[in-house]
Image (cartoon, rainbow over all chains, first blue to last red; front, side, top):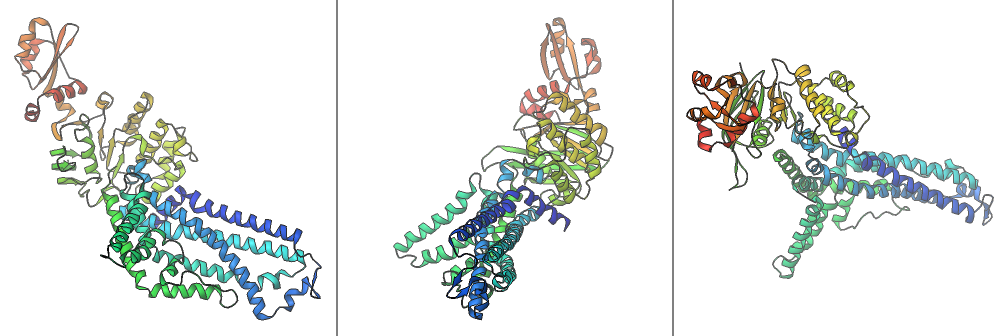
Length: 319
Length: 293
């Protein structure tokens, strides 16, 4: 336990810029854009004391029916989800390059000789790197997105006050930040399960590439896909290429993106209508589809095998 | 005395038709010794060390502290410390973080000891390795390693690229603050003169074979250096010297196991320096070198 904590802390210390500062910068940019948008609205939009259709703005929310309030809350939730999605996009690149460097950089600077001079097995080392990619970095990104989500709601509340609205009834009542935070937190273990093939593949490339692990990690799957497409043209392997791009290529190169298993069932992504469903049910339906999908478990087995291969390659590397 | 390392018939080939880095290498290292593994570049020194540390697979029987390094590296490294040349500490890490890490993963590490060693140096906890000079990095690495209660310390060119002050200090610290009867040190270096006085044993390795395996005490008895004037040169050559070199118009001969009485007749006998002995052994034809064991 102590060893695991030490290994995870070491990964964090080396990658603080990606794990912590990247999400904070993205969150700060989101907040800044929100502030600019609201400042513009304060200059050009409705003013406090404005009367719309005979109703003062300050009483507007009190007159909304339940379904309209739900829409208002859903809209705010979608904004919170958007903030989270923005951080996830940044996190994708952080995790991709973290994994590609995880077993490559230590060989390039020869520090692998230092790490291997200590009583830590290759399996523990590699697993700690996998865990950093699927748990540590995503949990930090989640915490940062939740923190900036609260900042966003506070900023909205100030704007509501300026309009003469009560922030409790206009913002905090209709929106459901806690369920957004809970759902996005629940995405972390689900994504970890789904993304094992990508984690294993990237670690393996990182462990064996003598130069440029990125080219191996992306180039090999692209070449295989092009070869299959060519065979498809020759009608030797008719539907293979399409299946390959969807189930192998995307899985190996993008599966750390939360919810990307939804791309695989033909629905094409989150189909969320703030008026009709809650974000929570939409995402959790996706989770149900995930654990009942055989592709999840086939991928998990392949991913575990790739991680095991990365461990073996690291064991053999001597410099 | 118990053996810390037993190597029997180690064999390692790089590539299918590549050179043999180890070619039937056999040796033992006993506890409480300081052993120098000395050989030219490409002789198999580093491969032998890597095999001992479980960093590379080799054929043959290899036992280090009762463990098989190939399969039990994790357990082995609780008892074995290792310094490759100075440049292997990760450059991004802070001194404090490096200490935290070793403390977190090593059951036999003493933080207090490490901090005591570092207090004597200019190395500060908040510094990053990339901000340290080469000498300071070596001091940090040595402090980390000396704070580990290990039974075997393996040093592979530990002072490469350091200036002479740091080199002297490095070995002095090892002798004064670390080495004792329960510990064993195995060291490779090109700077033979520098470690000559601290070694208890030497292993010469050439083309993957051990060509000399001797205690330093025994070297003085077995090998002799005699300076001979031009008149006695023929008599000296008759004793089949290992090597001859010219100094101020006289010849300095190095003998292996020659009759002490006959040597005394030639001139004053001295113990050869390790560097001269090394050069002499490496320049002999291969078969003769093998027979010298």
